[in-house]
Length: 111
Image (cartoon, rainbow, N blue to C red):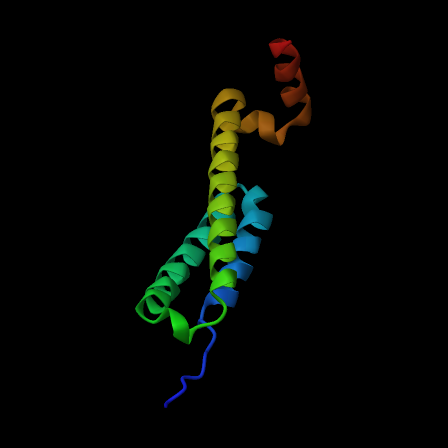
């Protein structure tokens, strides 16, 4: 009988690291976390296809799944933060973001 040596999925660790980074960088105006999360999803799709083709050949599928979940969370947080930044810019304007006194004045008007 031939025994197949189990291997690790090639991008599982990268997907896990990128998923974590997408959550960490979601506060970088949402853009960086969004890009990193999308890259993680692309790598996930490639490894998922490999695993689906021959599941008994690969060992670290749990890392791949965890990275997938983290990248989805990172994308959601990045989109929420990006929408928040866009709302701030549309409501207060760019001038208020650059001038703290003007921002405080506009916040006082809301109360």
